[in-house]
Length: 70
Image 1 (cartoon, rainbow, N blue to C red):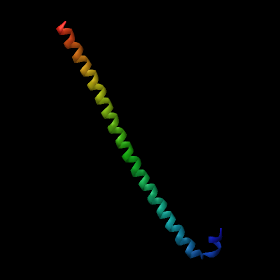
Image 2: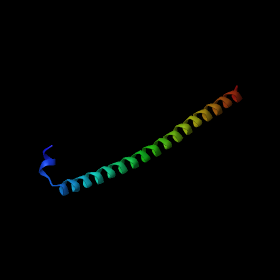
Image 3: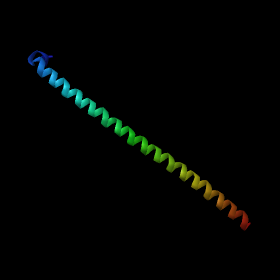
Image 4: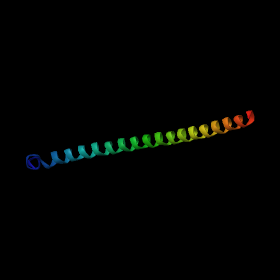
């Protein structure tokens, strides 16, 4: 790599520190994104279960009302 031969050790170290800081920030952002995605998935699970329960409740109430009318 030509950059290793054209830059001083100090310049390379500064570049290294800068890239480490960028990578660390990217990892933090990715972790926050994972937390958000997990929260969304948790909400969606609750919503799906609520809709299933609502459907079962509606079916039960409609079945019992049909039985009463017959």
